[in-house]
Image 1: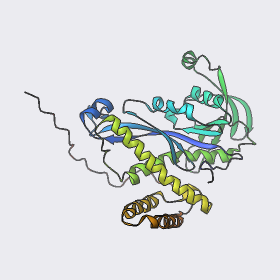
Image 2 (image 1 turned 90 degrees about the vertical axis):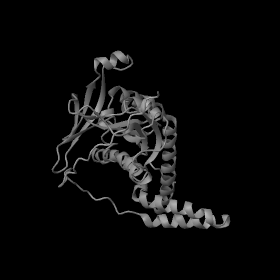
Image 3 (image 1 turned 120 degrees about the vertical axis):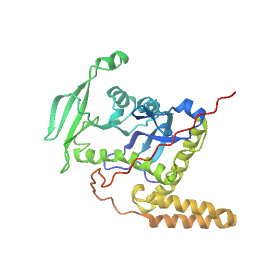
Image 4 (image 1 turned 180 degrees about the vertical axis):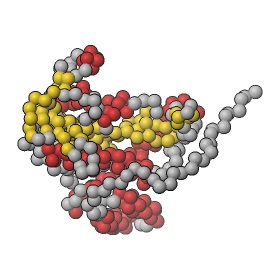
Length: 330
């Protein structure tokens, strides 16, 4: 099978992303004690308990490589720290701006062979220009903050990075930071294109929420351990669907992201239901037909779209439904 980490860089690098999402869980006593209720403002509690889920995903295929589940009060940064030792050699790591940690990136690039990272710059980041590579890119030096060096004495005083500036028409200039310092080996245009794969992780989470869970209001399990088990099972099912999509995409020589996830999931569900009423000897024929059907699900290349985040009609506020207090034992 072709590598699910395919990209336009001159060498095969696994493009990995880390990001988090929230999933509602049932309001049982055990779940309430562990996950807690987030505040919804004005000293009010949210209607549902929420679990914080952080995923490590191969962005070229949407394979979920690992999943961490914690309470709402746990940060994405603390949950995602468990991924650090699992990152392979020959990879590019991309994270959300809330997870940017210079010390973490430094150790990542020192950990293995060809371990790279690529992130968008925060507005308050300060760097010193060391070398001008072109009109919109430089080699710069970023100092490590004193608190970071006190907590981790192995950090040097500063780290060399590459800074790339780009701007799409109608948008503000964006700054990218990366450890890929060689401008000839890693052209700026390809790094900019690569950076926009970061949102594939959010697309993957949407596939889990909207299509796999079918917009389920909340998970079903009533205890924290079962919640973790339910989410792990969800990730396994998601990866199995994605694996079959990757096989078909490899046969058709297209990106796995060009295969429709929703329709693939529906086809597999239909086969699963019908498999109970057919003879065992005919199952290979059904599986072969499934692969042929997948070949019809190739989507056209994505268009460049821009939609303002605004609505014409704002929804009215319904009365809030709250959990009834448990009766006091006499």
